[in-house]
Image (cartoon, rainbow, N blue to C red; front, side, top):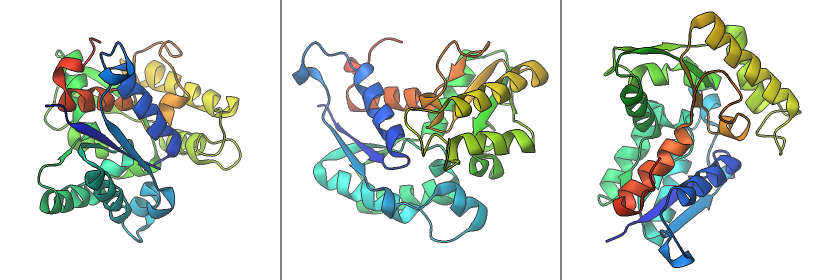
Length: 251
């Protein structure tokens, strides 16, 4: 029996849309009726900024995330996806997971970072240096380092402090950042390409994780001289597999 997918949008909104499109793109379907049931919330005002919480404290965004999960569960979703890397920091994600397990024990809450790290380990069984482009919150809590612990053959390389600030501005800047401007501004793309090139040329990165769900909106495969790893795509494929394995398209 197929299970319905629930997407917690609003973290940011375009990233949620990107995930939904990738779910559809990775579903085997010849007509409308072949696609999976999918529900999406978009309640950004109720979900605090994840990086701001991790860096400065305040109300935990887990509360708003769980309220969206509750709405999705009541609509019928049993597979839940959160298209935000920073929201998977244990201080946020673990709270949502614990509350979901208590109130909705039939819910499967997917973990985008686990899916991404497992994928990288399969792609590079002999080891590799993997670059990370992400928000300052994701860097500050060592999110990907934590999830890469089971894979000691992989080495995570990150931009220096200035590079991290530049990437963060490419996402958050109110004038040119991806969250503020659509379509993505040329300035944001320029910043991301510069930092990406630096990770490859100066730190020997064999591949780059697009570790914020806004980044796949700006960087496409082929724009840098190393493979780009898109956690949103991997989350989409995990969602389809969890809902109906026979409908997951080949890579």
